[in-house]
Image (cartoon, rainbow, N blue to C red):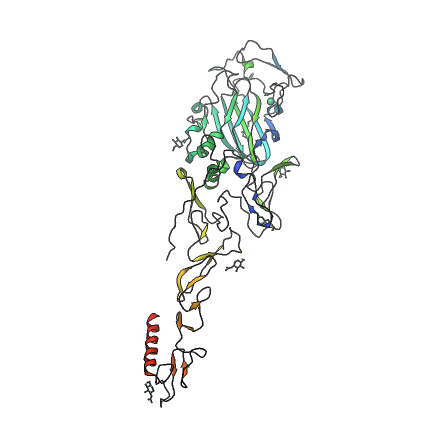
Length: 502
Ligand SMILES: *[C@@H]1O[C@H](CO)[C@@H](O)[C@H](O)[C@H]1NC(C)=O
Ligand SMILES: *[C@@H]1O[C@H](CO)[C@@H](O)[C@H](O)[C@H]1NC(C)=O
Ligand SMILES: *[C@@H]1O[C@H](CO)[C@@H](O)[C@H](O)[C@H]1NC(C)=O
Ligand SMILES: *[C@@H]1O[C@H](CO)[C@@H](O)[C@H](O)[C@H]1NC(C)=O
Ligand SMILES: *[C@@H]1O[C@H](CO)[C@@H](O)[C@H](O)[C@H]1NC(C)=O
Ligand SMILES: *[C@@H]1O[C@H](CO)[C@@H](O)[C@H](O)[C@H]1NC(C)=O
Ligand SMILES: [Ca+2]
């Protein structure tokens, strides 16, 4: 008989308006009884830790020194880039420096003097560490934003790359893509790579300097516009395929494909006003620690999670040496800690989904004989082995109640079956004293301890007294007293009653 399906609604309450709020601590309580909690380091501006590389070689201005003009006033070409002069040079590290005293410092390329050959530049930002973006990535361009560029990312330290977002003043012309905005994205297609025209149109070089990769607005699709319900986002990250990966990167690359033009076409007679200049790149992100660390530190010039929960590795992606009794798993935001005895989603289901409008996670097809909304209980007919960790595949043990001695195939939390009268034992597979196992506990009519046959009779099979005085030596009377007809018929009735009950 299949166990009945029970539907239990677990309401996950919003608990914080801070993206970093609910996952600050890796454990609750202290000492041996402390409870492990999913945790992650706070976000920080990763521009402090990025390695910047610019391609092709020679794209940075100033070697040889070069004059440049501005789009606003193309006939005033008094500015000069000279790599040998500290005041006039524009090296790549000025994209990641801390600017002081209101002085804007920026990296700048050579001008487009080789037009119509395209003016291309790649900026590769590397951290040698898996990171999770936590807020908008903002690239600040001086002298106008490119009319066409691509933001790419790598999740494997530069081995493979994929586009993250396309930017153009005309997406169809530049990339053959129809223009989209993040506000066009729904929960089902949030991880789509889009081309946006929002950050490439000419509005004046000083008006709008930023090109943005919108993270906040994407988070808002799940967490609400003010990011009040970050819980909902974190739960989605675990239940929706590809969502966490979408926000994960170890390198970023900007492919600058066409500079700002200041108008609709290129003025061939003044190519000195076309170039790229970037003053800042903000990358708010946190170290990816698989929910096993709340701190991330710089060690040997490399970011490294300070792993807890007996994990180790740069991303806490392994069990610590000597802790291999349990297989490694990423930390889980599911279930929300809700007391002992529940072991929701500890790897017992791989099909959880999220119901938007009531903020509920439901797991279907619970494995390992678990059941419940988040596979947090044992199936009926099974009980929990309290000496095993919650995520163990053998956590639920079959009750194995004796079908004859038990009143039900289900057992208690301790594995105790409910016995019929006369039966006993965890599985109800033995008899209480005074009863004999006859496909279940049957009350004895006679035995050699309490229910002795009287008047010289001997008990046979706990049900009959063989009485003396029958010349063939077989049973003359059924009663225990071997001399009492009434007693015999009463005993016979009792015997027949027992026989029909079975
Ligand atoms: C930028 O990177 C892409 C991808 O590796 C490469 O195809 C392209 O040639 C690079 N461009 C420059 C200017 O180095
Ligand atoms: C990158 O990180 C790994 C793992 O921590 C480390 O072994 C390696 O030396 C680092 N590489 C560089 C170039 O810093
Ligand atoms: C995302 O899905 C929504 C709703 O299904 C749809 O209206 C929108 O066009 C989609 N966006 C993209 C970029 O495909
Ligand atoms: C880590 O190992 C210690 C020592 O065996 C154990 O007491 C503790 O419960 C473990 N912590 C977790 C989160 O598994
Ligand atoms: C519970 O798990 C422990 C440890 O693996 C095992 O020794 C024990 O036999 C299990 N108990 C049951 C009832 O399966
Ligand atoms: C002994 O008693 C049994 C049961 O009443 C009866 O069937 C049997 O015939 C008796 N034997 C003799 C010899 O009387
Ligand atoms: Ca700067």
